[in-house]
Picture (spheres, rainbow, N blue to C red):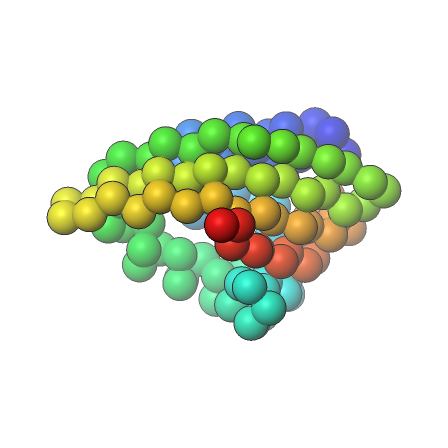
Length: 112
């Protein structure tokens, strides 16, 4: 599982969000964003993120921490995404439940 998570981290840092979505999210993944349902499938997540990612011209992503316990990973990233007219900077925690080398549930939490 460590290799999968290391690859996920590398892809995220490289800004390959849509590719990692297709590679690592289960077909019926449940994704939560600060307690609210963001997507109930890989395709829904992909479609929603594609609109946003298309506006980003530069990614700066840093891994702040990573913990793995059983089939759950907890990854904290700091993001700086530059678009044509704006810079969006934030820190977020991804709590991922893995089954059969796919993420079946991910909860994203904004960190102040």
